[in-house]
Image (cartoon, rainbow, N blue to C red):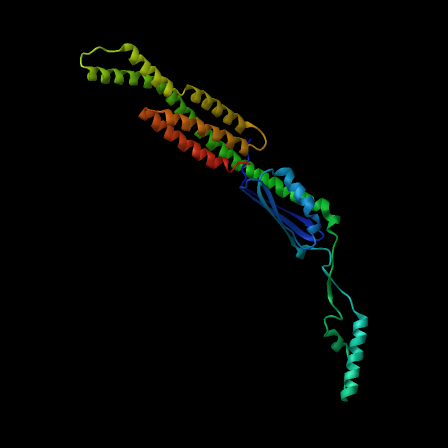
Length: 294
C-alpha cells in the first residue's frame, strides 16, 4: 500500500520534567529532510530522535517540534545560591565609600539582596538522558500517528490513480481498435484519389500496394501499444507493493509518456489524435499525484 508524503501526527506524555508534546508534519520532498525543534537541554538527544524518524519515513520533509509544559513538572526548575565572596566584597566596598565620604547608616540585608548577582536564580540543568526511554516512546507514538495519516491519504491517492489507470486502459483499447481501420481507410481514400486523377488511364496496382504498405509501416503503433499495455500493468503492480513506490511510479510514467508521444507522432487519424490528447491529460494528472507519494 502506498503512502503519501503529506501527513500530521502528535503525541503527549507526562514526565517529571513536565508534559512533553511531540508534533510532526511531513510534506513533499525529493529526498528525506528532517528538521528538529527541540527544547533547551534536549539537543544532545537530536541524533537519537533523527534515527527514530528515519525508521518510519524514507522520503519527504519532516518537521518535528518538541515542547515541554513545565507547569506539570515535579523537578524544581531553579535554585538560589548565595555568592558569599561577592557579598563580602560588596559590603567592604560600601563601608569604604561610607568612610571616605563621611556617610551615615549601616549596610543591611536589603542592600545585599538588591544585588541580583549575589543571590542569583540558577536554572536546574536536568540530565535528559535519564528520561530517554519516555522521550523515545512519545516520539514513536507521534511517528505512528504521522504514519497513519500518510497511509490514509495514500489510500485516497491510490483510489484516484486506479481510476485514472482504468481510463488510460480504456483509451488505449480504443486506439488499439482503431489502428487497423486507419490503413483500410487510407487505402480507400488513396484508391479514390488516384482513380480520379487517372480518369480511365492504366492503374498501377503494384505501385498502389507499395504505397499502402509504406503508409502502414510508417503509421504502425503496435509495438508502442504493447509496451504501453505492459507499463500500465507494471504501474498497477507497483501501486500494490509495500514500501516506498513514488520514484518507481514516476519512472514508469515517464516511459508511458514516451510511448504516447510516439503514438501521437505517428497518428494520422483524428479520432486517435483526440484519444492521445486525452491520454496525455490523464498521464499528467497521474504524474502530479505521484509527486505526493513516498
